[in-house]
Image (tube, rainbow, N blue to C red; front, side):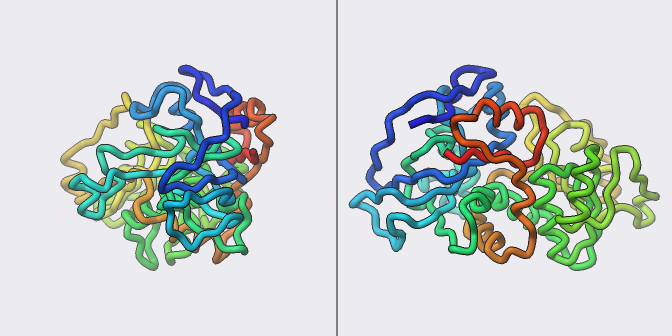
Length: 335
């Protein structure tokens, strides 16, 4: 089978691999759709410290059950469509025992530490396979993992009806964040340099106002001006710092974007103290995959709008070029 393999720093190459044998406790999945993600870019450039050298990338994917190991007890059947939760905790550490398995120090991740879904077949633990209802297409089901990460971020933001929310960045994660916040009763604004993405945010994902960088100004946060919750969905030090400037007193700032490991943000402690700001970060998608599948099935949002490019595995190099150049939104491979 063909698989997109992290060959060396700066290079993802399609290679020929044997179809994996289904392992005890696992199911074999025939991949239907696998999305490219910023994490794949970080892996490619050696910026993900825990990634395994030579791994087959792909942690955002859906597929059909091809085989079930005899040791597995499940209601799933061969042919069923599933979305894959890539995170595999050890189940034996203090975090796993206290409902924080995403912080497990021994966490394995499909597509990061073990071979992933940017291939035609992959063997995954049964706990990773989340059933997808018939009303969700395989292409849209591949959005389950990033959406589950956004669900975690919005949970941390603790959105209330009537809140004013600012989202910085209108890529796929930012647009998902807007949609969930707007559907929770918040009024959502967005800052995004790309005009087409701003338009997409306004027309399809619930934003009420859209600004280019530098256009949005607020009054004195000490007098109640600014936003109740600010989500940074870019992953750059400068936008993470600017998120604080838009927060009113008592606000929550959620850093959703993944920064480089060497990035540093300058924060004035007195400003955080005086305005009683809460700064939170998000890491992966604890207990969010089934919720994400349900949200996709509800179809209240035009989720298909997020996927702008589809390529077969034979055109992976072209897909990677489109992805790395930022030409589209979500780029999906259909192996």
